[in-house]
Length: 121
Image 1: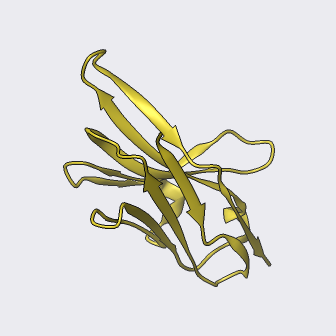
Image 2: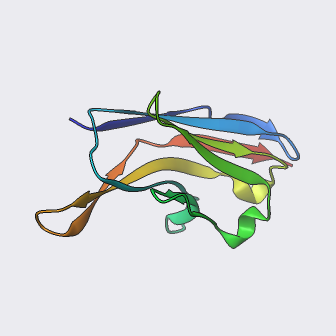
Image 3: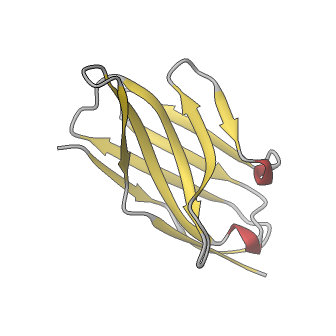
């Protein structure tokens, strides 16, 4: 059974840094992409950063060079290094893995339970 577990969230002052980690277990074949999303209260979940299997990386416009997504294939880990945090970065951050279902030729999405990031001003 696939399981994604995030860690590393917390309370930080504006301008500070946090490193989010996501541990993937259960064996996920045919990974199409890995990513981080976030959801603030009253808002829709939005993409933060996405790392495709081919190596292409996409960041949301609000990242502005402050965040870096990375992966450790050997340890089945996904990371999000967040620097220069702002109060508007406050949200629950979710780890995501997209898998290609070759039988249905469709994308299957896996999500973690989320980790709270709170940035105080």
